[in-house]
Length: 145
Ligand code: CA2
Image (cartoon, rainbow, N blue to C red; front, side, top):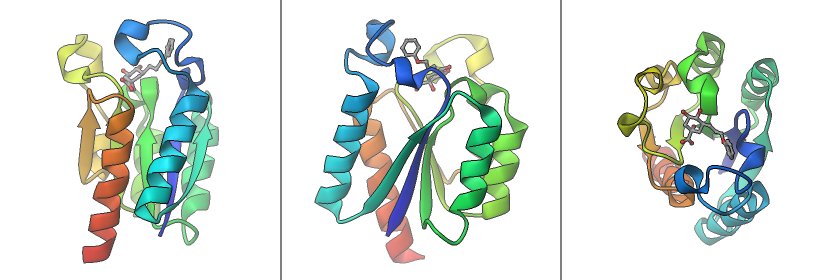
């Protein structure tokens, strides 16, 4: 099973600021954690981060026929992007929305998620562990479907 892990804008700055919200570890540590988690579960993953909405749309489109599922933390684009929602719907791959922080406890503008409509599962507030749980969810989902 091949899973694409997408991270949106500013997540490349992990560990540099706001550690009380996003944790102390950096983006490289997140990728290392994901690779270790995937190895343990026998999954093949590719991790990709971009600060650009269209680039993320391109990667979702290119996943069609190549990957079996998508883990996505769209970061700020969660709350603004119909383009990411449309891309996820278009490729029709099972996708899990992940957030490091618990967005349900944060500002009003973070209560909207466009991508959620295309995701059978959302995981929030569990830091890096949330990404591992997303991989596990997709593994089980793909085994059943
Ligand atoms: O909790 C999450 O994972 C978020 O997707 C993170 C986004 C935020 O806009 C979403 O509402 C929730 C922000 C990512 C920014 O990451 C930073 C990392 C270090 C320093 C500053 C920002």
